[in-house]
Image (tube, rainbow, N blue to C red; front, side):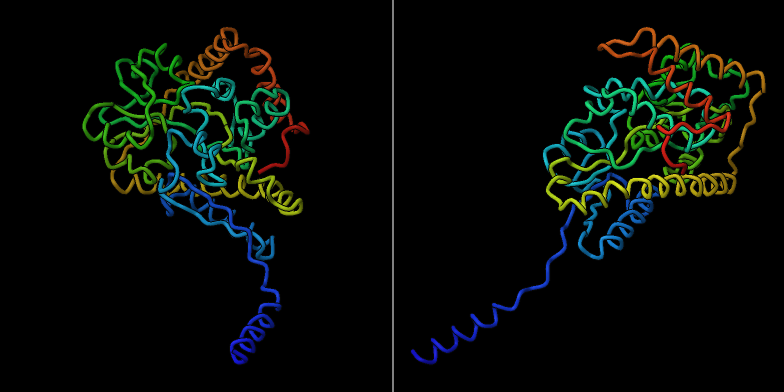
Length: 346
């Protein structure tokens, strides 16, 4: 008995030494594989957060859709499946009407920085954009490389060449492509490769980085360089509950890291664009320059469609006011007068 009592006292004495504080672990999930350009940007952000926190924060990633889906990520993140995730509000069927509407108001943008700046100014002016992500805190606003048109068998030099083509396009561009005589449809990007390979669709409106990242150059012959404006949207978010559980200094650290994530994504996109072009040329893909008149007509039609969408906005959305803010932001950026709402440049 005395030996047992002595052993218990010894163990009790050992337990009095405090264990080092374990790091706070945040689970991050994305539908992309670890080697995708967006996942490489994620890894840069993860390394930054873990380093700047002095090891107090650890991000545990899950790649390739292991924990979160492409279709229901907003709901899954709100319900605590993970703490931080890639989100796709512009592809959500309901509840993100303002986010989807504004994505078509970017006529005249010239860069990813332009796109992100416009979204920031819209977000500052219209609380509805934040309300549509209730329960979540955006961590990265994402633009993208210039959109072109990937086609299987037919080059597109003039707008008339679009007639009859069945194309996967972003939702905000469906009215524009339909007006030009194409047969546009919206579908998950993950479904585009098999759809083109089987001849179900004739092509896709997409940036050049997808020629390798999504292997479109393997199933298409032409990359048509008609430039189509594209918008920005929140693409990474943290659950508000997960953020508020952190100590105030770590909460601030995470919010301050947003610009790091946005710059990493922009940098990876730029690198991936050239990689995609080189890869496609190596496979013999033809890059088609458009007729300059066709580009001018397309730009004018884009703005006309944006004005119509703004005027016809439903769900109580201030479409015309949103369009004015977007276009005013772009004009100020072009003049060299960056508005405060645009935030730091990428």
